[in-house]
Image 1 (cartoon, rainbow, N blue to C red):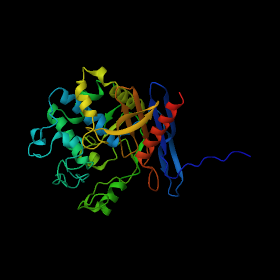
Image 2: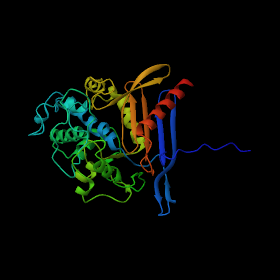
Image 3: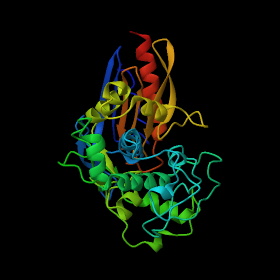
Image 4: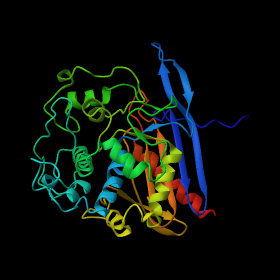
Length: 354
């Protein structure tokens, strides 16, 4: 009798890559498909395999790879002051909110707002500086600060400050070159549902207030509605595409940050890595505990809504990457945080056996 086959959960990503680079072991697992199509009868057809060279929509991973890393350089060059008010860089912007507040998600701004319907950001939802409220709007403003400080379009600024110096040849905004791109989403239904239900954010608009929704699969275009519909694919909070090898290269460079003192001042990088009032949040970076080779270390990184997450351990040569197309399911997709937690568990287990 043959052994029973393990069942794949119905909400599992169509395709998944997990990768780790550590001083003790390397891990690379690549399974499933980068694209999935269904017939009207519900049959899956036209699947293309996931590979290590597949481009992924990074979604909110953009916040650290592009925006936060660019700001590490600009602060190092004294072109941006973390404690300056936003109005120092963006005329007619907020006087009571600092650059540091935005990076710590303590600005009090709304978490999300459909800027493709109402381009003007609303007044803050919370009192600035009082508590952490994760905000896309804050990182949109940080992207605008990068543009103001450099005098360049955000995609050009990120290329000059981040991707070219770090040799990230497969990391780009908007449409990546080639056809090997993971499908990001089935369509714009997630944002339409957010508007029509008022969940999780009670904005005063409905999907009928916008006429340019995408009703077809999203591939090679950023899934995020604000990044795509309001900013042409280039924004501080979303829009970047990359491959797993490039993301590993980025994480390795950040873990070896002291070796890149021609790009930034190491003391500035350390300030960005340090937790603020909220232990789980540094300047731009999320912080996670990881049991590794008999000790607990801190992983700095960020997840993305489409299904990618990355992390690194400063000074320890540890780089971790998850990339998936988790939204390509009929029901509720598995959370990116669950995929990330699985990589952290696998990394802990592997480190104990070497």
